[in-house]
Each structure stands twice: as structure tokens, then as C-alpha cells.
Image (tube, rainbow, N blue to C red):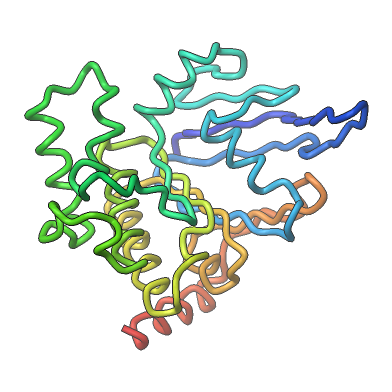
Length: 244
């Protein structure tokens, strides 16, 4: 398998009023291309910090980070923004859609920063992404006209429109009821089956069981990294299908 992400001895220290907070301690993690990984752990354990580093939203205090064989440990802010926009798609708990933009405009927005994509290409990529999440019939609607589940589908479309190497999902079902949560998880399953590499932070054990692999974080350290139990995964999937 090809390693998409390689983290070696990653540390993150926050300094506030002369107090050092060690958020991450010697994290070593490899994510292979096409893998579906879940990260779990209690609040404050370092999950969100780790996801921010993976998404190039923050930098580690120490350690090495390789993305698609390139060392991105010490690149500057502009380089991080360029690589982040091209290589990484984000799905957030709070959807993060812009209220005065239509569905189509929200999905297109990250692509407008891509100098390698023309206007006509952008529109086709948006169309393809919305079709993949079954929201092609809502292109001219605004976020306020959509349910929570529909808004998250649009957020997923925005994440995948640019065909990123990695999808990072931060508690993607956290603001959804069980029915809509199951729908979003089924969508992530489909994306993974189509070849997407997904890394998801979740508090929900049932959502975590949908992944191939579960990494558990505690007190800034990886305490377990194991394949997901196949029987448990099938139970989680079947329960979603039954709810649908």
C-alpha cells in the first residue's frame, strides 16, 4: 500500500501565560492511500489538534510530516494554503456553509482559489460532486432552506469537488439526528468504496465502527491502533440500512 500521510515524532506544545500545554506527544501515524481511518478519544485528548495538523491548518512544534511523499513539516503559510486547497477536503461538524451563498456557490468557493481550474471546469466539478451526494436538485437553494442532513451533504460535496487526496471529517454527525447521521455515514462509506481516503474524528462508537481502522488517543498519545472488528463494522452498517 502507498503511504499518503506519514507522521513521525509529532509534538504540539501550546504556550499560554508561561504555561506549557503538551497537546500531542510523539505521535507516529501512517495513513495509506484509500484507507478509512477513525480517530477517537475523550474531550481534550488531542484529536482536534491532530486533525488540524493533518489538515495543514496548524503546524507541529516538533516532528516530521510527509503528505504524498512531500515533506510539509516546515513549509510557509502560503504553501500550506495552496497544498491544503488542492490535497485536502474538510467536513466539519457545524457544516460551515456561507448563508448568503447558494448550494452551488458554496461548493464552488474553494475551487475559485485554484489557478489550475477554469470556470467551466469548476462548474462541472460542482455538478459532479452534488450529483454524488444526491443534492443536484438543490443547486439554487440557500443553506437556510435545507435540513441539517442536506447541509452536511452539501458540505461533503464541497469537500470532494476538488478531488482531494484526503478527506478529513471532524465529528461529521455531531449536529445531526440519528436518521441524518446514518445517511451521512452511508455517504462516507460510498465515497470510501469509490476510492477516497478518509480520516474521521468521532465520539460516536457506532460511527467509528464504520471505518477500517481505529486509532485511539489519550492525553496526547496514541494508545491503540487496530483494524476495526469486521463483525462490529457489519452490525453498524446493517443498523444504518435498517434505519433507512
